[in-house]
Amino acid sequence: VDLNDGGILGIDFGISFGAGLQLSVPELMPFRLTRQIEGVLNPIGIEGLFKNTMIYSLKALKENKDLILDCCEIFVKEPLLDWMKAAKSSESSSRSSSLESSMGSHSETVEGLAWYPKHKIDTVSRKLSGNNPVYIMLKELEDTKHNRQRYKINLKEIIKGTYGGQRNSMGKYNLDVSDQVDCLIEMGHDPNILGRTWIGWAPHV
Image (cartoon, rainbow, N blue to C red):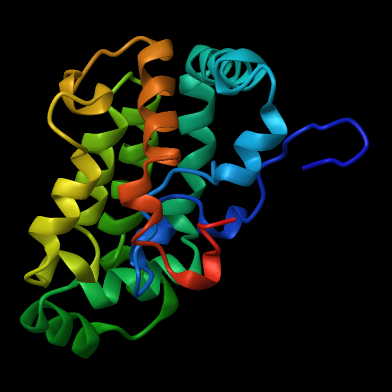
């Protein structure tokens, strides 16, 4: 939060592309929208400039979808090191062993794990195509270590939200920008999500 003009700027881009779901305590919120941030937005609140700015920004991104996806293709040939590490841990033990025995160079490693950055780019594409953020996150969860744990069912229910809630009642595909933003905002300040977040993230603030 800019203390001079009250502007809000997203930071911590190292947790972009769903990296927060890979953490030991997965981050299920799309961005920080705790009580402190909501307080800064008063008296207009979330429904004012904050939401409208999100809508205009997402519209601009969707209008330039092809350009953005073209730029993302570089991640297939030069993936982030964190992506390669996550891809290896997501491999089944049999597939991992066969890959490790055949990896003789960096290029071979990247090629063998290319499925992971392609999944990430596909996620970007689905976000820019109007898919419901809930089902995008559920799909991302499948590529994490949590998908192999018994508590994954609980995580999925938390992401979906309560029955009759806004994000739970919307369809999976072809949402307009305003509906996508409503889903993201609801997830961002959902007490059931914030209450299960790593304490170091300070969700209570």
